[in-house]
Structure formats: C-alpha cells, structure tokens
Image 1 (cartoon, helix red, strand yellow):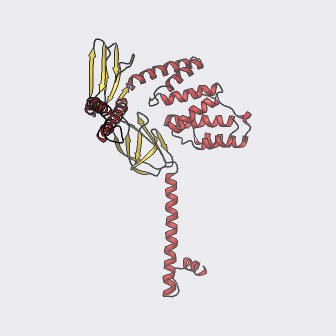
Image 2: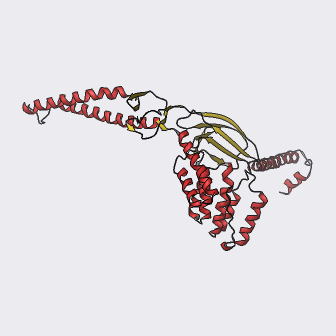
Image 3: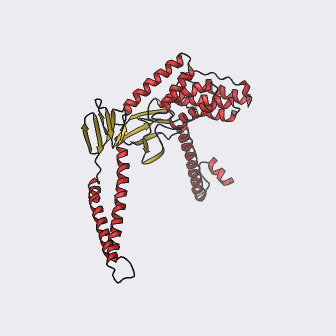
Length: 383
C-alpha cells in the first residue's frame, strides 16, 4: 500500500520494475476516476430529465426502442436517459405511427403525437332505424367501420349494415353438408336397427364413422360462428367524434354550473363525462374538476381516487403537478405527513403553477408540523 501511494505521489519509480509498476497503478486509478466521473455525469443528466408521451387519442400502445411498455398513453417517464429514441404507437382502428424523438437533458420533454384513423365513417341521418350486425342501434346515426367488406341494405326507413366474414363461404357450405350428413347417419341407423347384422355393436363401424364426421362438422360450425361474432364486434365503433361533441357540451354545462356555485349539479355533469369514453380528451379534466369539488365537499376518498387516476393513468403536463399537490394536501389533512412529503417531491415543475421554493417551503412546513393535521390549511382553487 505504501508503494502505491509513493507511485501516485511521484512521477517515476526508482528502477525499471518500479517504474512499470507505478505506470500500471496510475492507469488503474485514472480509469477508476474517469468511470466515477462519467457515472456521476450520467446520473446528473438523468436527474430532472422527464419524458411526457401524449397521444391523440389516448390509450395507444407504446414501443420504445423495440420494447413494448406495460402502460398505455399518456405516460410520464421520469429521470430518463437523454438521447434519441424510436417510438412506435399502435391502436386498434388507427394506422401505426413511428417517430424518432430527442430527449434533452435536464428538461421536461413533452411530445404530443396524433394517430391517423384507419377506418371508414358512415352517417345515415335519414333512416328511422339502423341495424348493425343484426342489432338495432336506437338513435345512433353515425358509425365507424374498420377495414373489411360490408353489405349495406336499405328497406323502407331501415338500413342494415353487416360485415362479410372471410370464412362465410365455409359456414354456408357447412349449413348444407351438416343436414345431409345428419340425414344420412339417421338413415343408416334406421336401416341397421331394423336389419341387425352379426356384430357385438348395434351400429356398424361405417355408421359410427359417419356420426364422428358429422360431430366434427358441427363442432367446426360452432367455432366459426363464435369467431365470426367476435370478428364482427371488433369492426364496429360508435362515432367517437359525436361522443366527444356530447362530452364537450356536458363539460361546458358543468363549468357554467361551477361558476354559478352550484357544485352539486356541476359534479353530476363531470361524473357524466367520466362515465363515458375514457379515450376522450375531456376525460382527464373532468376527473380533476370532480376531484376539486370533492375536496370542497370534504369527500377526500372520492377526491383521492380521481387524483390518483390522473397521476397513474393520465399524467398530462397541465394536470400532473397540481394533482400531486392536491393529493399531498389531502394526505396531510389525514395525518399522513410522510406520504404528503413524498407526493410533493414527485412534482416535476412542468408548468409555472408552482415554484421550487414554494414546494420546498411547503415540505418544510409539513415536516415541522408532523402529524398535527389541525394546522393544515387547504385552499381549493379551480385553475
């Protein structure tokens, strides 16, 4: 060990052997120093480097550099390694989307990506009734059809839309063959029962084989019918644009009621939006507004549920930080000071709503107050 320190302190050793030894020691220490420096630099670059991936519509499957994520969009990836990534998005009814993105160090990198529809929209406003795949759809006049071949028939004021199944010809053939085989097997059975043959079995092997083939055909027919039903169900979607127009209208009504201080009626409207399509762009803001009203009504369980849904499933830049802040305040009111601090530490400052000094000060206040929930002051505002 003494010789190592002498090598590090001197330029050269006293002889050839010690000189070579000192060079090796210095190389090792230089490598260790550079490794430590590079690791520290890499950690510093990752710290505070966040990636928001938002798709229109939501709930798209995300693949990053060939690895499919368990979560669907929108997602927030914290402390991400800076650099270039290859993003692939996929969602039923939309074209796959590929894009290379550059994640810059020390920033909140926000990417909003729009998927292109891969379907046909049809509208039949003049029809009294519309039958889709054999089911009457009431007042719906607009539908979205994915790729496929369809048959559209109109009679009087009723329109019928039915997809053509690719194995329909096989089903049609089985519908002819199965009755024939069933009749043939019945005729053979009748003949053999009335004209006994010399055998230990009441039916001959040939007749039994006919029954076996007929059973196989019936089983195949059932499987094809089941598969056709699943196939047809996937092809039809209600017009999401029409649904979003309704959601937008309901949101406007709810906001107006909130401005008029009719929070109960406003909450009912927000919940109406939440109960509809979770792909809608109005779904996350409805969740947040419902959380705010629930906090005003001291319904902390409901508010926590709404806020946690945003944080975990809809981490949008405009909602993420303030959802964490409000959930932290709820946790503090409940006496969960440690949880409140952890939630505040998760804030990424993606908007100018909060400053770092403000959040650090609040953390210090919570740490000082401990579990004394009666000192908490909960001021609710709807941005």
